[in-house]
Length: 488
Ligand code: BG6
Image (cartoon, rainbow, N blue to C red):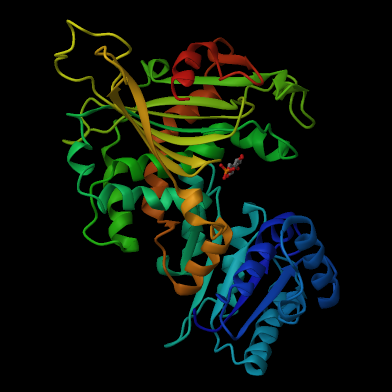
């Protein structure tokens, strides 16, 4: 079990806390993974009492968690609430006193995790104030960690500024930058699959692989997050984080050890090898789209521009497909297609490894049926599994072949023990393992690489010409549709 600690959740009255954080903590509590001595202190601007906070947390659980709540009173007894203005120093001094008292009462040994479930605009202020009252200090035998979720800035300059301000109080090993994709079971499985088997890795290079696609399709639209999405668009929302991680995990060199910094070093090398975009030919490697009205599962849904809170002439992309190249020995010439979009027909997150054609078909004189190259699919959502497509002979007297699929279902294997991504994030943070978290050098490299595209979206005067409208419920812009359909 992790060491005793106090978890301080900033933004405790908000949606994320009720929807994701409390259910994840309750899950960990029920399966015995939380430290025996642990308190959870909710912090927010709302004037609430501890009793109100416990009631708010319970409501969240009733709405968002499945299963029996009979053990809830045991966890509820460890919940406390502390109102605080994010920028007011005296409130942090009071928080420091509360935490000290709780440590004394419960034996939590001065270990603290500060989880920022707040708007990103207050990350730097909270970190600085925690530093100012000494809450970021680690003594021998005790830790202080801060957890933040994307976006880490909105471009390279703001990411650097945020980081510099966080570093005034916290050192890099104390900062945990969440990417919930990294905590997905099948995303973790990518490295196992590649490097714990000997049969795939020898083929994992430009000689045998024709292309790699990392795709995340969603049927959901922008929902109630118009304000955020109008600033972010698909590139900041999905590419600068989740998609870049999928790309890295599919392409990195084998780390010498499965340890946070070894793996993160390899990702940095990979990001450094990404071929920079050429401003003059960028549109050859990029497609952008925005959903128009349409139908998803038979239900009519509005266009992006008709959603509540969205500008009627918004030029924000809700779909993007980028063709990237990795300029190193292993991947020279192999295109990586990275795509993500909203309001596509269904949820589908997968990595597709497309192998090359056989160099010479000895069956060309008798060829009957479809000869298609091998394809390996790593399914990350909604199904978790791995499929390999290969050619097999059709049963019967004629020599005739067809593609067949060999499938492994992680879901069936897991038999209900899948841990939610936030539960994993909490566990690893309590254990101090940063493997599932972003390191700042990678954050900056990815911002840097995407900058020409982001600038283009903001500055291009004829974006109108390039931003393709696609009906909700279709597989994206016309120019990408054929490719998208091949992914299925
Ligand atoms: C979030 C994005 O980070 O990831 C959302 O902000 C997106 O826009 C979500 O819907 C997708 O996550 P998942 O786990 O459902 O693929």
